[in-house]
Length: 296
Image (cartoon, rainbow, N blue to C red; front, side, top):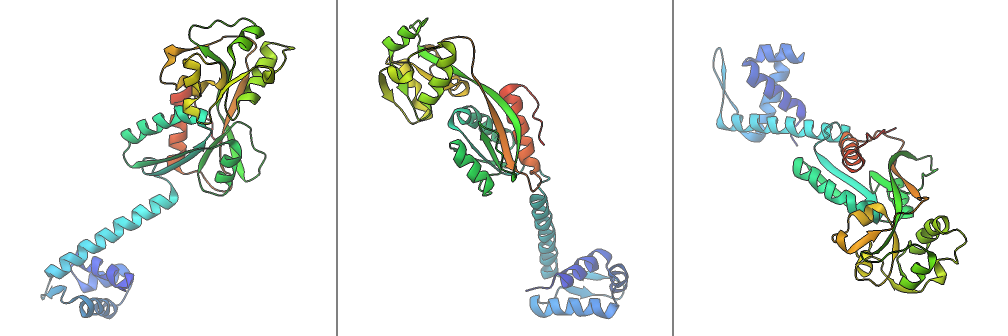
């Protein structure tokens, strides 16, 4: 392995053109500089043509000088990556619930198109998996619907997301009986979301379990397909509904009072969030909500 000190002596010698000036700049003796060059030439062959008042690099010397420049740039890139100061380069790792993920992933791709140095790694997962992944450093950023009380995690409000009662486009709903006649399209969080929303919209109702289940879907992007076909209604977070590809086939029943969930951006509290993660998180919040993200 070539000593970095030998390479440093060679680079300065190539710049200054004199063993004496090189020794002065590096704070070494001229004999020490000569020894460094001799070690390099024993390994790589002749690097210099020595003349009375100047030195000239051989082709091997030119190649070594380029190698040293490459090493310097590689070291700068490494330091920059470790420091996280470059907000347009590197990997963005984000894990989020599927609802918000449907809206965020296209925005992540838009940012990657603008800044090709960024690489996006995004996974859909429920809250407990998000907390675990960020806590274990598998992902730098996460989104959850409940603010965590884990001291390892920092959290800031990212967005607010209402629950939507979604029915087929041509169906009108004004009472509980209309929902019973329509039937329910369930999903992994369906009954819990429906219970929370409908208990406020229709106080004293008989409960979501009293309504016939007309289907169950565990893929967030497909839940509205049976609704669009007229098979039933469902309750979904708004970002999932807004990401649906055929909005004309469904309709949101606007009712008060609304149920609104908070979405929290989480990351490890013990160390500084990278500049690129801060940049992307702020851009996502601005593009999604039009508001500035206040990172802690």
